[in-house]
Image (cartoon, rainbow, N blue to C red; front, side, top):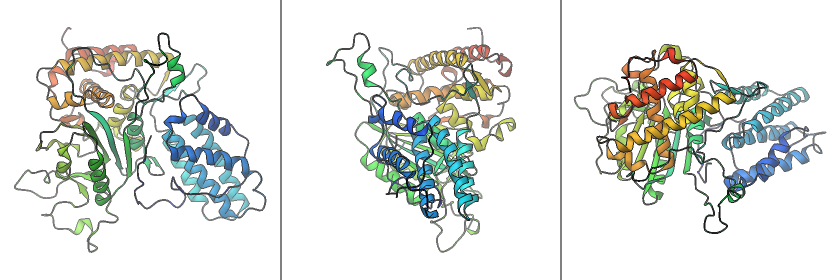
Length: 512
């Protein structure tokens, strides 16, 4: 979860509330499944320790308010009803962060009923805005392009957090670094992407990819052979995260500097950028780290002397942009960068000035036309890093799948990840920066998913342009990783299991 991340001072919707502060007791309660779900969240074995203190207080307060609200409804003023609606919206955000999608769906239904009662009971002017809140959260929970179905056609809620067997294990003899991921800045500034409150779909997916699945310590202790004292499982920490929605350059740099300052020894800072690309204007005689553009930062508060962006001299660099050169000071410590943008290639132009481990994973800068209309529901590149099987199904033209086949494919994908890990660690020409990060479970999984993503796109029939492929800094040895015959064979096998082999090229591999 987001542990102790300080809130940025961004303008907020006057409907969707902050995640802190006190709230008066709201009115009326409907009897629903939500209360039972709340109790399950708070009482499930081992789960409470995985809920940050602030969010646990929100859950507790919400239970209390629901219980008391039925006594307060008659004769209420409209502002008290609005407080209740705001609390619903706040709690929906908390449940999204906890990945309790079943509770979110129940809350959305209840919020819809409460809004309808509110607008009928009072002569309000904010009905359109509250309906917009409902539309936002509905679009958010329906953003996944593929549904996993039970036998009775109910939707399976999948978790994309790091499970106990999620990351490929390091084999004995593998030489990798001992760095661990400590902090992550997750930045979202994409135009027109589905969002709720200050959380875009891409931000949410990366947040989940950097979370561990809560471990029930009681069930772990009951495993055969587990001793009471010596073998007691230890609770692993999640990386500390900052969620920044449309930050200005000043805000982004402030959080970067704070995280850099507090980064422990032998730790890694991850920066995830999901943002609109900013391209260079005019010609430049040099090719430095400020000559290739970068990604957009919010311009609301950084406009100097009232000058708009389009009025600035073309010989000047774009000021509302995070250029690769802006990150140079932070390469004094291990830095892992993920850029999902139409100008991600700007970040290929790095120079490792200080000799610390540095890797950039860069999205394609364009997608085939058949996939471009899906951009509002989140980036395909980030989906591969969050849920590679769902992304594979999407590019294969599948929109639903039975649970049994899904689990079979997930098991095969784990085998693919294990083989990718071996390809990386056995490579003789790979840059050592990749191996320095490979000792951390989160970064290891992101690297193996990235290679699977790149290999899939290179074999797919409609991904035929160079700009359709992800890239890295430093460059990966293609013949040993993304174009390795064994990996290509695995992708075709996975396609055969799904009966979609026809959408992939067969002549890219030799007989293996």
